[in-house]
Image 1: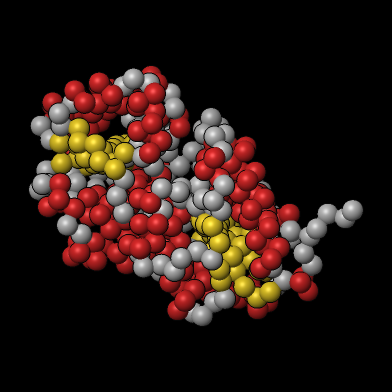
Image 2: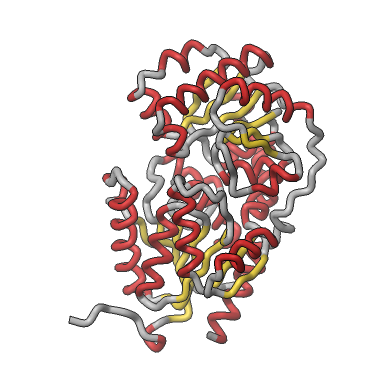
Length: 379
């Protein structure tokens, strides 16, 4: 039996957009809007990596995006990377064989993006990677594996800036490189005014502008390692007692589960300044971030959003793929040692937030869609 691939004559002039996580929805929101504006024939596959309401559907509602044509519902039962990626690969492949697009776009470094790019590659469909060329050079991180693999199997590589392009050239990728910026800038610019006007999250939480800190935490090297998670919670206690400010902890479902499993609830509850809240929708999150005096995070997306908004960031990792944020003074990598986090918090609060980010001009989605339209007409 011959394994199925799709020939050029079978493919249709349409584009598949693969998403599956909260950052992916944010990243693709300007691209979806631009596809509508430029009347590009497209469809959305939600690969199901994030599946709770406040990590998924609420974002579509906040951003007024069309519901995905396809959604994989069996992924949430998978506990390990291999099983999760395999289920998404199988599901996406089945959809692509039905839709037969000429190009598939993925964005970022999550398992859903690897599955989407690999499904396209195996079927001889062109794959495009948004946010290509980013490297933390930390081979312990599953996100790093995904980035490198996706870049090497993609036909079109859309980089944020020259750093990403240089990394791709160094890695000798086969695809064509386009430096276009990052659509996260588009998303922030398009939605900040709406968030400030319509979100009531500060009133709901009883917060005053610039008088609180924000915390997000989800990376497995932090939340799946008891010692690291415990240290971060201890660091937040030190921060609260030394700076006399509350920390709004937008807790990821996985992080909440690990705190309970590791019997760390006592540490979290003993810190009266640590106010644990469920993860919010995008508009509420954007307003919380824009009005915080500082953010603690291990998220690549939040590092970028903070830099764009001029909010000092303390990254709870030993390294970052977004090294340019560190170079311009918008960010510092603090790891998980409590006293270092405390010291770096004081350092970041003293810095002036007059940096200029290098993530693009807010027209990245337009550039990407124009390139893709050109490829549909010429390739």
